[in-house]
Length: 326
Figure 1 (cartoon, rainbow, N blue to C red):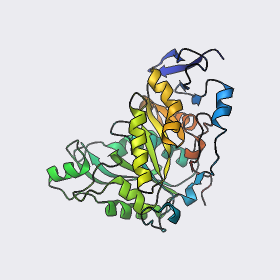
Figure 2: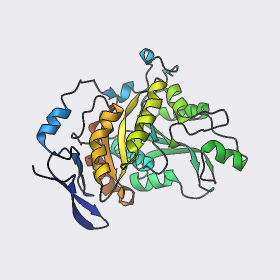
Figure 3: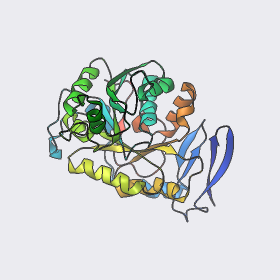
Figure 4: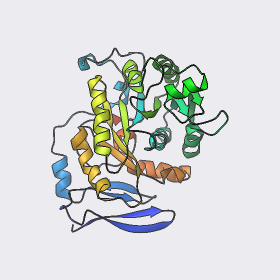
């Protein structure tokens, strides 16, 4: 194979993108960004073989996702909470809501009962459409949605709550709401605001504290371009230092015309972070109708998240949505 290229569909215009100048010399992956069939594929079979030759670790299954794991030495887990996935990002605007919607859409299509919890929404006025409305448009009405608080200023939750004169949401509030949602649901997705260590309250509580109290794995949504290796590595290092498990990473807004840095990041992220890359969604994914969005999610997310993508860098562990959940 002399060159890695991808057909990119955006706004009805299809173009070809060549990855890294051709062949395996670039050492980077090509992402097919067609809105019909979106797959990540290695430049050639030899690279796929090389990537899959690493140490194998059994996948993390959803039934065990939030069970106590005393061997980690992390915070005390809550054994009563199961089937929870916390979704965070390397920052704001990286595509957390679209990735959360994609996971929810796949789970609903597989027959699972799904709830999505958005603890805090900032930069949104009362009555204004927020992230959960966006998620409803992409997934439909088959998901239970809950938002605990919203503040008008587009700031970190603790700061926005203080400026609004409102009582902030605490990690304990989020854990209590999550536990309520696990009753009658097979999967609860908890989507944070901003990054992992953004403060929820004046006491310094964060989404990391929520994941620790729940004993839930954390999926990290990252940007595609230059700088994401450092941002993602720092986020995952913060998880490890707290004894928390990272389910993997997803690129939340793959550009229509990826540059060299974006293409190489597909290969480098698993090496730099030590966790699997579980897919990528194009930056226009949130504009699709539900049926097309579901098809996109299925082809662009890995088995661990309910999709069918099997290529890409070596995946040492993952978050498996089994069908049916038991």
